[in-house]
Image (tube, rainbow, N blue to C red):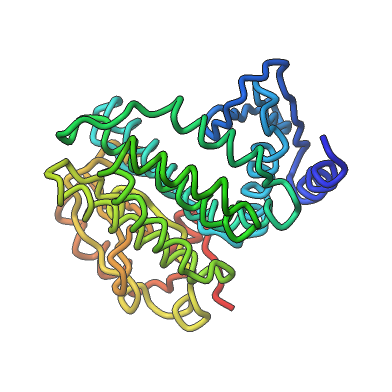
Length: 323
C-alpha cells in the first residue's frame, strides 16, 4: 500500500468500532473489477480482501472511503426489512439496490481518489478491460443481461467523467467509444443515470439522499422504456431519512404516510406496513401491526401521534440530522 492509502486506513480505524484490515492476493490480471473486492467479519475485525493486485490501491481506497462515509454518517444507508418470500428474488433485489447505492457513493469516492492521485492512465485502461471482461456485447434485441449492463455502464460513465476531469481525457474518450460500440443501448441509458449522479452536489446528506431516490426512480423509468420488469427500490429498500429538527420532533403524520404492503416483514413474517416519505414516497421504515385486526386502529392512531424521533428510536433505525 502507498503511504496515502495507509493513512486512509488509519483514519478509518480511528472511527471503526474494531479493526479494519486489508489483504491483497498475488494475481495480476490487468482487469480492474470493482465487484471482486470482498468484506468479511470476524468478531470486531473487518477484512477487506482483493484477490488481484491490478490497481489494488484504487479498489481498496474506494472501499475505505465508502466505509468512512458510512461511519461518519454522511451517506444515508440502505436496509432490507421486506421480503417476497422468494430467496432468489430477494437476493437479486438486494444486489441491484446495493449497486445503485454504490453508484451514488462512487460519485463521491472516485472524485476523491482522483484528487489523491490514485486515478491514472493505467487505471482507466484497466477499468475498460474490466468492463469488457464482465459484460457480453449487446445483441440487436434487449436481452436478460440488459439490466446488469446498465448498472455496470452507469458506474463506468461516472468513472469516465471523473477521469476526464482528472486529466485522463484521451483514455476516457477511447473507453467511451468502445462502450458505445459494444453496448449502444445500455450505454445510452447509463449516461442518463450517470449525468443525474454527477450533476448533483454530493456534499450534503440531504442532496445525497435525494440523488439515491432519483436513481431508484430513474432506473425503473429506463427499464419500463424497454419493457423489462422494474425494481421498485423506492418501496422495497429502506433508506435512512435525513430530517430537520422540526421534522424529527414533530408527529409521524406530518412527515410520513403508512401504507399496507404486499410484501412481508422480514422479522415478523407478517404482512408489512411501509412508512413512505410524504415528499418523495421513499421507504423510510417498515413496521408490523398487531396480529389482531381489532387492535390496529388504536395502534396506527398512536403511531401517527408519536414523534418521528421516538418512532425511529423504537424501531432502532438510524437517521441523519439535516445541517
